[in-house]
Length: 254
Image (cartoon, rainbow, N blue to C red; front, side):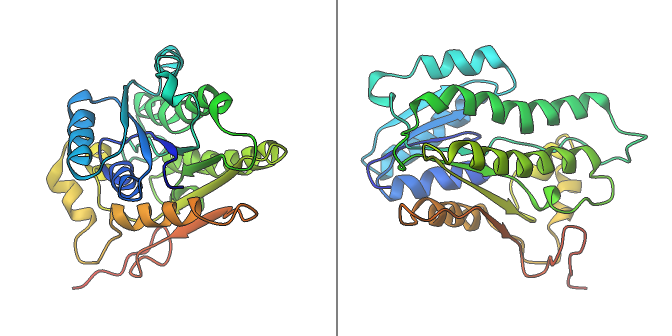
């Protein structure tokens, strides 16, 4: 993957940011995407201070189809080929039973986790090499493998990412373009702060009493996927903290 161009969505924080740093460390040029220009610019500046690579930033709301296609169309000539797309942008909103859930939260999750992934993939596909060098990695979740209490719609969106990854792999293998998916368990990022709408105290409790995954753990798994021999595709990886054997069980220290 050295000297290749990789697009990372949701690159301003969490897994996306960690993946961007690891890619840069390995001499990949980057297209970093996100909604928050100040954070995206800060990530780009921090990476440039450490690594001699090219970075392009695209500020867009992945839920907005026009913004996505306009942003991709605005890429400079040097980014006409995108060797890999890391579909990382995603979120959870709320943690309620289905009867008490907010429909606004549902729309936000469906529009981001599923429709946003579709929009950016559709926009970028014409630029991905069709000779076996192109790769798409979708960031799912253990929530897409196992539903848990009050997870309902979030779990459904990540199950859709799982299913869509399988469908994309079938459709794009004829080129070929490789398609992989990573399904992490509990990773301490902004995830819970977003889910609980800025309630940092509640979010902090999610990760208390056990050793959770780090964003860098997921980044290293993504890098592993990207660097298999040309004839090898890692269809999916489920990556969990040792203390979390499944979606709904976490062994916490008393």
